[in-house]
Amino acid sequence: MQIANVSFYLYLCFGDAQFPLAMVTLFSTPDELILSQSSDTVYLCEPIQGNEGTVVIPISSIRSVVAMFPEMAVSQEGHIEHTGKFSLMRHPYIELSDYSTEGFTDEDEEPENNDVS
Image 1: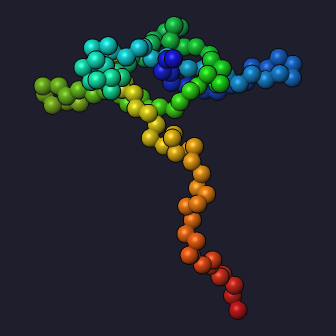
Image 2: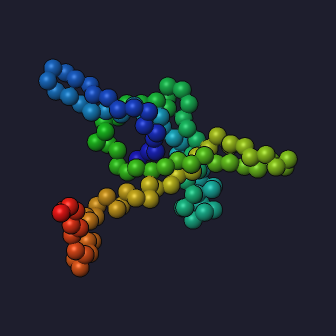
Image 3: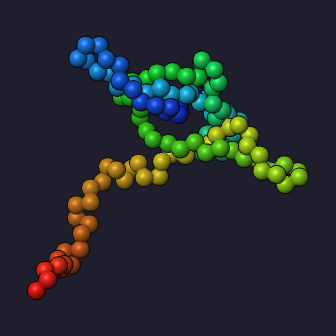
């Protein structure tokens, strides 16, 4: 499994057959030292530049939605600078998509009557 940024989605068509694909930019594997020092909680990666980092994949191979946040550092002069690395964070609402809203309504609530007499 590898982390990637989706640039765009497309279909590859052969006759009537359509194949949904995504063009992605890959990220490197996490920095092993930071991963180890953080007890496997901080996944700090760099985007892979050039042709090696751009690939087309079947959308069925996408397993999870995550966010990659840019790492920032503060210089001795107090300026905030981007390091060029990104840190992984799972999308906070992805697990909620498995739940239904059924049973979450207030049964005591009376329906509104919008009739005008």
